[in-house]
Amino acid sequence: MIQRRHLLGSAGAAGLLAAPGLARAQAWPARPVTLVVPWAAGGGTDIVARIFAQGFEQELKQPVNVVNRTGGGGITGHSAVATAAPDGYTIGTGTSEFANYRTLGLADLGPEQFDLLSRIAALPAGVTVSVQSGWGDVAAFARALKESPRGRITGSGVGTGGAWHLAAAGLCRALGLEADRIRWIPSNGGAPALQDLVAGGIGVFTGSPIEAQSLAAAGRVKVLAVMGEQRLSTMPDVPTLREAGLPWAYANWFSLVAPKGIPAPLREVLLAAAQRAHARAEVQDQLRARGIVPVWDGPQAFAGFVANFAETSAVLLRELGLAKA
Image (cartoon, rainbow, N blue to C red; front, side, top):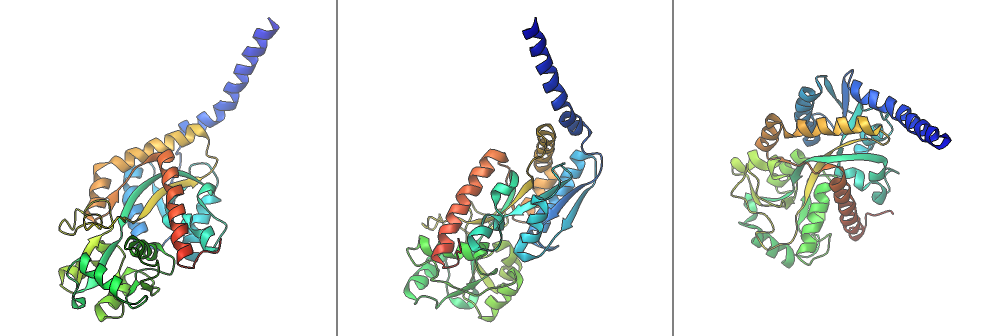
C-alpha cells in the first residue's frame, strides 16, 4: 500500500512539474513575438525573415516584429538570440556565419549555443563575369583559372572569410587548385562588388546570381553557372556547376534559431506553427519569385547539416590561412 501511494505521489508530482510548461504552451503567444535579424534591413536575410514573418503572424494570430540587430559581422544579432529569455518570445534568423565565428577567432559563439529549429531558405552562390571577359561558359572560365598564375583572377562579393569567399575557395578546390587561386577583394556586399565587376576591377563575382540578374538582363554581366543543387527557377537557362562536371555546390542559408532551454511543450507548439507558416503558399511563392530556395529540414536534420557545413568551412578557412582555431 505504501508502495502504491509512493507511485501515485511520484506520478502526481511529475504532473505538477509538467503543468507549468504545458500551461505556458497553451497560453503562448499572448503577446507579439520578436524575430531578430542579425543583418541590415533590405538585405537577403532581412527579405527572407520578413516573408516568413508574414506567414508566422497568420499562424500565431499575433504580430511578429522583425528587428534588425546589426554589427560585428552578424555577432551582435546572433548573440542577442542566444542570450534571450527562453520563453518563445524572442527567436532569430540565423545565418551561415554563426558556424564559423570560432574558427575565424571572431567570437566564442557557435551552433551549440542555439536551439537549431530548421533551415528556412537557401541562396546558391554563382559564377558571374563581365561580358567583356570573353568567357562564354563556365568551362572557359575554369580553363582561364587553371592557366592563370595564382591570384591573377580576382573575386569579390563579401568580406574576407564570408560565404561567397568560401564559395570561390570551394570552386578552386573542385578544380584541383589552391583554395586561394582566386585572389579575394573584400566587399561590403553584392552591389559594390558587381559594380567593380562591370568596371573591370575584379574578374568574378561568386555571390548570388539573383543579385546580378538586372545587370545580366542589361547585357553587362553574364551568369555562367549557379552553385546550387538545381537550376534556379528565375534563371532556368543557367546550368549548375555539377552539370558542368564540377563536384561543388554552395549556398548561403537562412535558418530559424531560438535560445536554448525553451520548455518542451512550448517548443513543440512554436516549431509546429513555424513549419505551418513556412508551408503557406504565400511564403513559398514569394521566396521562389525572388530566386530563393525554400527549405524546411527540422531540428535533427538541421543540426547534422550545420555540423557538416562547419567542418567543410573550417577546412577551407584553414587552406585560405584565415582560421584562428
